[in-house]
Image (cartoon, rainbow, N blue to C red; front, top):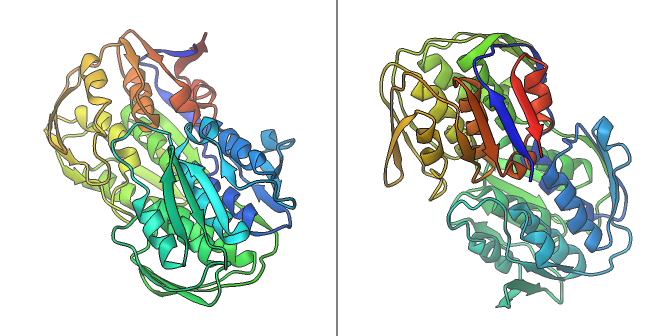
Length: 420
């Protein structure tokens, strides 16, 4: 099994180019089910999750052309509908596989999807997805670990109030409603940039979607949608991760291909901590900052601070001279990285969904184990500022969401390598 080995202390300077958003492309890949014309995608990150979603789609009869994936291009076409069952062996690897449920139901009037896998972050139920699709006329049963749904007469538009803001449920119901009969009104939708990117792609495919309030949209269902070409937005979580790296150990580190509008929640925290940065178009430049302030942070739905940067932010706050706290409001059990960070010298305690981060004078390299995608990259950040050597096990988590992380860091001077 592969590992990442880091010898800490080397400053990072030079340029890091941010790739396309993992969380944006996965639902957009699922939109191919809604049309029998090709979908041409650019700025595609070459990640394990993209490979997994490709295999899920291919198992349904989708043709996925990955011949230009090294150039960050992907072409998908769902001309022949072979089946409507997404098998456990594929879906268990990635929670986002459930995003095919709405499109399959809308296009084929039936779907059977294994309950999803992915990161082991507490209970992440799909009841919000099911409740919303039932409002469009779908019937559901749960049998043998599979969610089976059908709508023999097709889906019909309705008024839907999501009981909780959910990115995945918002994406699923928006895709399904695009082929439903009549008008669908969805209240309390997620407005993450990835959801907005999905809506932009669907509109270019012919879907009629209109915002009437900040979290309320109207969708006029269509009989068919067309293919399109779409450029995936930059990954705001990758951006934030390397921004934190720059604040920790940067020396004129330039992070390129960013979308400033999407990272305001991160920039606001940096401003509160008085971390210096320079914005210039689609680039942000940072150098190591001595943090002398503590903050009380909480994760929230966008535009609040993202849960996917909570683990990385703990490393940065550990180097402050004042204590801080982070309250995790999105997922339960998302502090699994804390024991590993503490083994490296962090001083973090947990009280329910709150972490208390005390100042740490020094991080020391150690063998550590990744538990999920974002936890794993927090260990990379800790390794970069540690004395000695850090060995990170189970790095397949990193490969799900960070493209060529060791290459990007080593090109900027970091001592990081992958071994078998």
